[in-house]
Every structure is written in C-alpha cells, then in structure tokens.
Image (cartoon, each protein chain N blue to C red):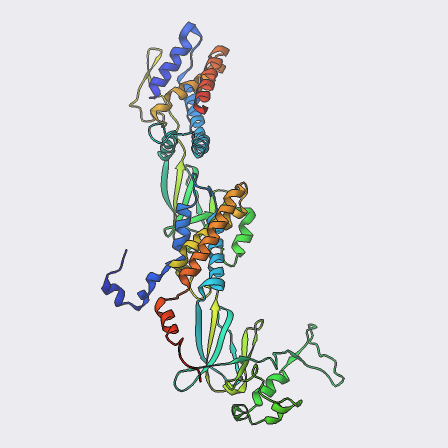
Length: 229
Length: 285
C-alpha cells in the first residue's frame, strides 16, 4: 500500500510541476499521517457510540462502529509481566492499556486522588479477589501490595513506523519492498485515501504550494461533513 | 458446570449450595451485562459495584433474609461471653437442658453493665500517669457472680417479691431461666447466675459479610434479582448526568424487586395454613 500512496502523492504534486518530495520526507510524513489517523480511531469510536446510542447508526452493513472497533482491535496485544517490588513494568510498545488481569481477575485502575480512600475502605478496598493498580511513571503498582506472581496485560500497541525503501537506479529512487527495513502502513486499505490526503496537507506546506494543502483540507472537510450526517 | 449426583452427595460442602449464588458472580455479571457503551450505566468502576453489592447484602440480612445464626458455648465462671465475630443484633439467648431443649433468657432491666472507677478515701477518682481514670471491678459484677444458683432457681427470696407492698406476679420480669445484659461497645454478654455452668446458645442476625471469606460471600437466589436492581439504582442515583426519570424507574424497579423477594422468602405453605385451621373448632374449656 505504501508504494501506491507515495505514487499518488507524487502524481498530485508533480501535476503542473508543483514540486517533489524526497523518500526521507515521505517517510516522515507517512509516519505522522498514520499516527494522526490512528489517534482519530479513538475519537471516531467515541463519536460513533454516541450516534449509535441516539439511533443514528445502522446495525448491519453500515455499522461503522464495528469497523472502527475492528480497526482498533487489530492492534491489541497481550503480554505477561512479573510483579517485582509491588509493581509491574509497562510494555515498551504500549499505546494505551485495555486491561490488567491477575489470576483471571480484572485489576481495577485506582486514581492517585482516590487511592487513600479506596485502600482504606472497609468493604470495597482492593483484595486478591478484586485487585487494583495505580499508575506511576513507567510502572503500575499493584494493590494490595501483597499480590505476587504474574499480571497479564492486554493493551493496544504502538504503530510501527512506515518506511518506503528503495534502491537508486541512476539518480532515481526505485521502490524496493525486499529491503530488511521495509515497512508498509499498518492501517487498513480503507484508510488509504485518508493517508494520501493527510500526507498532501504536509507536503503542500513543504513545497509552499498553498493550493495543495487547501485542496487536501477541503476534501477532508467534505468527508467529515458526510460522516456526520 | 453442574455436579454429578455422586459429586454432590459425597461432598458435604456441596449440600444445599444450589440455593445460593456467589456475590462475586453477581458483581461479575453486573459488570458484564449492565455496564457498557450501549447501556444506561456506560461506565462505572468495579469498586463502586463491589461497595454497593456488599451494602446491599448487609441490608438484605438486616431487613429481609432473617438469616438467624446460632452459636453454642459453655458459660465460664465469670458469667461473661464475647459476642460472635459476625454479630449485628441479638435474636434470642437460651441455655440448653439435658434433653437439648432451649430455655430462653430475658434481658435484665434491673441491672446494667457499668464501669467502676477507683476512688480514694475522699471519693476522688484516681487517675494514672496518662491522665486516664483507673478502673476496678464493678460491684454489680461481683454481687451478681456471688448469687447462688439455688437462690434464684427456687426463687425463695420472697422479701424481694413483696418489697414495696406489691402483690401478684410481675409477669414482664418473671422468668426462671435467667437473665442477661449486653455491652455492645465492649462486645460481651453477661449472664445472671441461674445460667452458671450451663451451655448457652446465642441466636443472632449477621450482616452476611463477616462470617465468610470474600470469595465465598453468597446470597439466596430468590434475592438475586433484588440485589442486582439495588446495585443499579444506587449507582444511577449518584451518577452525574443520569436523567431523573431513569433514576425514578430504577428506584421503582428496586422497590418492586424487594417486595417480590420478601414474598418469595416468606416461607408460608398452604399445608401449614390448613394445619393451623384444623384447630379452629376446638372447644376451649
């Protein structure tokens, strides 16, 4: 997908000889665009839930909520982390946690503001049956601190940075998907158009071609408007 | 998974378990089926649910379940017994006779459990180095412990009966079985000397939380629906942004569930009613 995205972007840019971007610039914009769209999944999910609750979303083929959910679920991952010094280390590739599970029991997040009250609660404090955790820096502190063993961490992982790899033929870079560091976009094919628009927005600024950025922004706005109807 | 007949009957811990549902299962089911993006309660912390579930269990035990527990203990010579660990309210105190029958005791309204501060020759209270009053043995305790069993069992002290020119029986105080006082703060029961050397049975109501480990807390299945609706109502009641009509609906549902549960738990059978009415034409001579 990445080669097609790059070719489309270059085609748009080269029309009327507006300009050109290097592979390094493209890779940088591609990473940014992918992250922007990924972040939008979550706000989009929240928006669609609100729409569904107000009966403005169809259930079957048009169920965009399940499409977005599936897009997010693609990045879920499970890791096991051992409790040491009352805490576990967060996975290094984590975007956001989904759940922590201790002995098949879901651990509940305890905010720092409420920690003292909840731990002191005589009937609802954290226990081995209803375990909890506090978030601090790169660690999660388990509650109660008598817990030992492993914690299963379900989380959404970070995206891997896309990389359009190439070999030089003469002075021209030619796409080389066999390179060891090649990495395609991780988002689904249905996001290809959005990726192109997002990259065009950035390249329009780089080549000082306001029309490109404006056109991309306009397409984006029209799409958003359609989705909100 | 359902137990086989053999598994059930050969393990006494399984007997009667089908009457109950575990509290942890109710909490888990509540989180699974009542909380979510497309539910009225879109988000709630499990601690809130655990808290409300346990509070609901306590209310059930105080109000509806009437799950009376009994503890049998030999009375020591000082005529005092500690309250049971999960004690909330006393139902009945009795001593056990040779045939295993219970003889109920009465609350002793003519005495009490009192602290006794030590005093010097001039009746000043004696304090220790920390400024706290020093305590001694109550005269009430001493005197009650000195009363012989025979005096009270036979009730030979007629002077007391006729003191003040009163004749006839004071029925509200008449009880040859003995009496007791409870000090709820210090957590013990003091018995009168009639009960000396006997085995006593304390029947009491518990809150349902203290006598079982957290993962074994349970409630009768007939009360399960009420408990779920109680949790839901308590949560929406204090949740910001929930429309008042939803709160009212949940309140009504919870109230109706409580009524249903009480009817289900009443344990009245047609056979018992028929049996009682069989004596309706008996001549009272």
